[in-house]
Image (cartoon, rainbow, N blue to C red; front, side, top):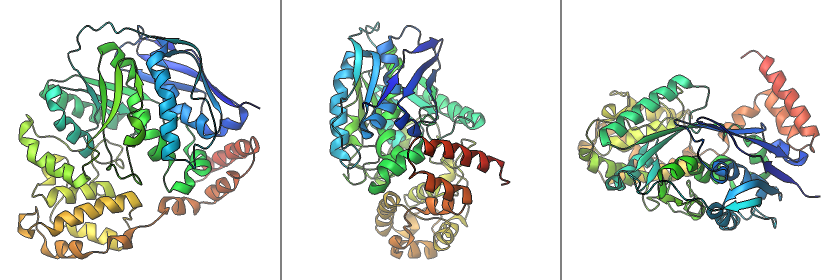
Length: 442
């Protein structure tokens, strides 16, 4: 029997694109909806269908490939269609335990080549830009190209948080205006349409990474930009690497992101040879190039769009800046003389724990701190730095901490059992479990 995920003809109303998604019953467990949509900040009505479907195909094709199914679409851009076999092969090389079957990269009714209407783009390139360490480094590295900036709502900040999105959007727009570069904003349910819990259980549990980080993140984000890159003729969509080129932990997967192409545009991972701390050093050395003080946005915890200054990712950025002698308060954080000791306390009490990727990042910060003079560090608290420089960071690595906390809830225990049940029984009981959970008092 052939299983498939079919992507319908895109429907465009102004700046919003919707495509219907139809999946075989065995595959429905991996999807949480039947409509994939993207909203842009300008009309895309003139964009050809074969480009408009790029975001949906890139999000859904890996699900089909991992399940040994086919992905089907009506009209497709020729460059994009020709890049998909290479992308599939790269996924198989990176994660052979996930992508195991012999599947066709994509089935389509019509393959077309589209000419861009832009004779000479005012920007030769574009990039994903959140304002964090990775994207800010990438911007500084490519600043002379005057890259256009893409900011995505529905990635690290959920769609429901409009106030936080407006704050982030305003901050990026201000940065773009000060730099004289165009800013594009995109909003999509590209994460919400996937059932990550089922995907993680069935496909990624044996690689100690989740579907978002291992498979979806690196390609799903740049693909959302496709209709706008077609309109403006951008040759590249740069994406700052989230870690390094270490093959075991390629957070933004340079091994397969570079395979992704459509029209005249290529996706490209940048700065794969730099650690996070090396990026902070680079930012510190080049801040004088920027016209105004900026916010370095690292936080995924605070849904207001601000840095909470109290999560693991904020802590690593605060400390990374501090050991370079930079005051984090000048770049979007709220700290005082007690903050460093608070970081130590949260580690020692288990309030903050590290996954394996985070462990390597903190090791880089620690190695840098060992080579710094305590007096050159911001808020030089010698007792903290003495502790941090000699701390056994491996003691703070806890695998699956989030899952252990979730499993304490009875409804989550039920869901864990449901994951092992055959389809469609799993989906029926899953819906009941979610309904029960919603009725429980918090």
